[in-house]
Image 1 (tube, helix red, strand yellow):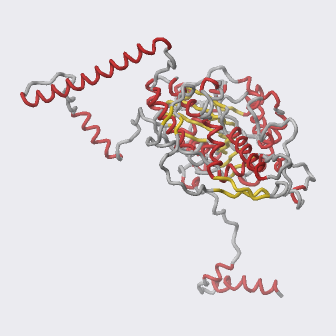
Image 2 (cartoon, one colour):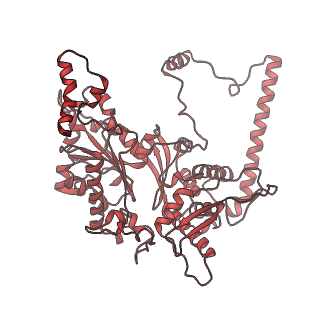
Image 3 (tube, helix red, strand yellow):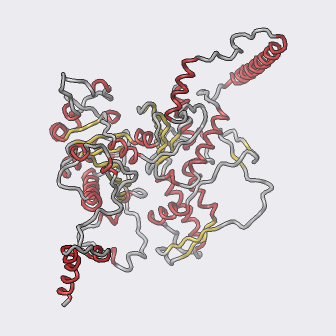
Length: 567
């Protein structure tokens, strides 16, 4: 009966439309329809170039690979379709149903013997001495199959891949990732792009200082005209920050525990969740606070307000259901800022005790700027991009810029740290230079006032430049295209926001910009990474060289290919 009733209900609108009667809106809504495109899917490709539907051979899949995640999506979209992480739950074997055990969620996971902090949640590590590349290949292939089958929903035709990778990646690890994409997913070609370059593109800039605070290390890269000109690294990043948070939580749990109880051992999942939810970074104290300078440390140690009004210290209650016994821990809110202070800035340690690979972040940025030529430094210091997973910590970006500005005001751009016995002579020269500058300014003002009173001509150095009619006309014509750009800002410490490396890769793929490192499938399967030439860059003229009238050389017809910055 229900089947017959359903047939009569579906056929009524059709009979009325045949007789010439206009069907009702309710009848149209009840008619069966073909599947629609989900609302979350972007339709930017429908409004692209007129010939976009006939250029399927140039379709891309945009991927960004980090040490703890894989992001993927399509060109022209502002956000990736998926962000896949790695952890013990994603590495279960067939028949492992422990996650449905009621007692599994209340048990604290212990770290495996011989494993570093958070090693089970990593895809790879740059130190390949103890890395199983076969396991890395299996993890990456499983994540990519999930992305293709669950989020991308592509047809059987292979797609080109634009791959965003951090620079200085080992060749063995890069070869493992490329083997998966070329062999398992039949990518016809892969274009490699550097993450600092893509972050610069996503910020709408051509030159920037990219501070990537990642998981295992912080990388500071100076980019000028889309080229990496200088780079420094430090191990002060998300991994060390997570360990410091675990130390703070373990100390707070031990204080709440009874006498004679076993010491608390917070798991990585608990520390990571607390850090992502309630972790924060203190802002740099203002100038009205008293400043003390210690001879062992170049940066000032700033005290709190002496006349501050006493108020109850705010606290945060954090549940620990996996603790034995389960407990709701109340932690002062100021305690949750200590991990960022100790891991990223290390104010309690003298600067001469750090190695070059473990510098605090503000000193790392300062030394990177100090190593740049003066013209590139002027561009980069006013375009500081702070990105990476840890950069989302509240208050961290403001603190970094404030510490860097204080360091520049204190030390200037002098690469010499200590003049020894010549320190007094240097101070005397600086004092003399300041006095000469003040004297010249005073003489210039006196000469200007005298010329205004007596109509005597000024010297050439004090006269205002003449107005060029051609320059004025060009400036007037440039106003037709909008307000003048503000890209000439330089010489000041300034931060710039970016949409991230994946958004930059999506923009480049949508504009169909050919990269320097383009690896073809046939050539890679034949020679591997050994088939790349030793050139670090290919000139634009060589890429666009013509082979005669009507004949052009495509990206896949190059006689050789290069690894660019990864060579």
